[in-house]
Length: 470
Image 1 (tube, rainbow, N blue to C red):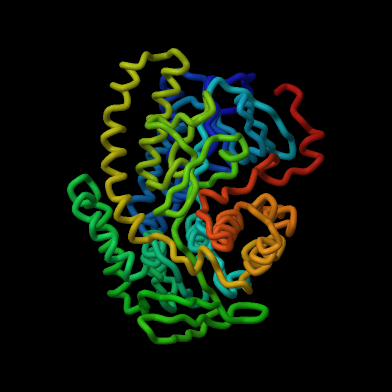
Image 2: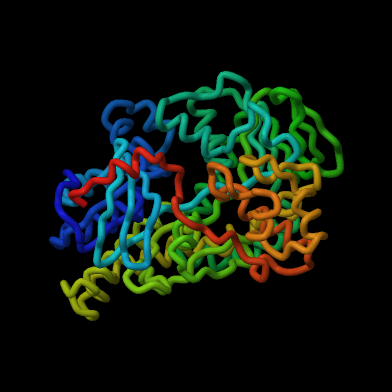
């Protein structure tokens, strides 16, 4: 595969996770001129990261990571055979409503155009701004899992896992299977959420979510069987240390606890990655249960901008298998838009994926309510840093609100929060919630950062080396 063809493409897919791979594969199999661009050196995204290498050369690691991870090998294989053009190790730094995709690769920038675009950039872990979260020795659960998938690296210190959500339990089970030492699991899921989620349990069981429930129970049973200390209903988590992590303190069921620790992994669920969709100007809506913004899309992934679709977790959290089906639904719609099939043929092509998607999403109301985020991390205490790039605390944001600041974009002008290398990815959700709390408004009313290109830092050299052929 190469990226040597001249633009415009029939379709450009951004992101090589399950949604992007499935969309690109179906389009290429139907003879569309499709280009898949992605930051990673090989297909798979974060969920199937380095799946081809692990599947072919590390059967031991494939066993550790489990059958759901192994599923990605078939997805990547079918994509490789599809004939789709592929540009790995490409950083997309601008996408326009006119369906231009600007990217940098190997020190050179290029512009591509397409009749349709699918944004399949997935999700990011929700920020977990607790006291001490910026200390060396604190990682996200996703980062720990990436080290395991990409380099078979496991923690050489006893690891404390803290937070809530399916990934926390999955990572605990994978770490145990890999031989890593877990010091403790600090489960922040609240008793209130556990009770409130039960109302959604019957529908989850009846409509296709039973396999997910069984998997969750199996993961929790593995943790219990391991003998790793498991503290439930954890609140007031604080990571101690001066130059590095020295310990954690927390409350669990009314008791104050302390553990020595040098390595802590935090996780409080995932939210749609919205930087790219915001930068294009797509309409977004507020998810009050999951407490996050997501782009507004229809059942096919069509956004508010003609010809730009969003598929997978970037349009709303559903998980890897749901993302795969959503990618194929988007591809079917793109084939209709390209005039390759009519509406009736699109509907027939999408029938199986439509049914499968509904089954995979049946569990979401239960999970979304069970792992709804706590106010403790949405609106942290004044002393807690919320913008890591510019070292801005929650108290500093509240102080400028008291001076008349009305939203995230003004806070950016006052404090530079959101202007560092991450371009507001990490602090954006928390800044919105802190301002909303200070003003007594909803996050939806306060809104989000106005995102402008470049989406990722690029050098002047990359711009100077613009590929004239593109």
